[in-house]
Length: 304
Image (cartoon, rainbow, N blue to C red):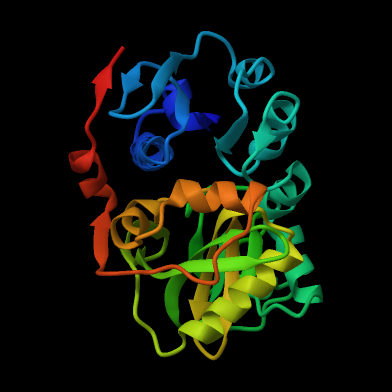
C-alpha cells in the first residue's frame, strides 16, 4: 500500500518543541510502515528522515490533502485542526485514525470530559464553583500542556476550563482501537514538571504498576465512549481512581519508546485496526525512558 504520513509541524516548518516531537513521531512511523513493506510518502518543509519519500509542501497543508495520492493516510496535527484535515483527506485515502467527529470531540476538552462522565468513565471533574483547595486551569482547546496552570484561586474573567486538582501519578495509556476491539499497548509514566505551570518533559515506556489492569480498563472505556480508531493516547492521573485528563486521537510521542520495546510493528497494528483483526495482546520487552531534549539527539535528519 501507499501510505501518506501528514505531520503538521514537520510539513509546515513549525520549528521548536512541536517540530522535534513531530519529527520523532514521523521518523518512527515511517520506518515502521517501510519495514512492513509499504511505500511511504510524507510531507515536509525541507528536513528529511531516513525512511519514506519526502514531498515538499508548496501549498497549504489542507490543499495538499485535498489532492493526496495514497491508499491510506494518517494525519498528526494540533487536535483542533485534525477534524478538518481528516475530512479533506478521506476524499482521497482511507483514514488510519479516528473520524472527524471523534477527533473533534476529543479536541473540545469540555465536551470530551462531559461525554466520558456521562458514560461512567472516571474523569477530572469540571468545576463551576470553587470551594477551596487546588484547581487546574487549562484551555478548552489546546495542545499538550500549553496554558495549563495549578492554582488555589481562580482568576476572574479567565476563559480557561477549571478542573479539580487530584493528587496521583501522571500516566498515559497508548492503545490501538478498531472500534470493536481496544488493544492497550503500554502504560507510560509522563515526566512532568509540576510548578505553577505544567510542562511535559518526556516519558518512561512502559511503566510497571500493580494497577495496570485497572488503568487499562478505564482507558478502554474511554476509547469506546469516544469511538476512537487507530492509535490514541489517553492521559490519566492515578490516585483514588484512574481519572482521564485528556484524550489524544492521534499518535503521541510515546510511540518513540513503544517502537523500541514492542515486538510487533506499530504500522502493522494500525493497519490491522482499519483493515483486519487486532491480536489479543502485544509483547513488550525492556524499558525506554526519553526526554524532549534527548529526542533531537537521536534523530537522523537531512534536508531537501
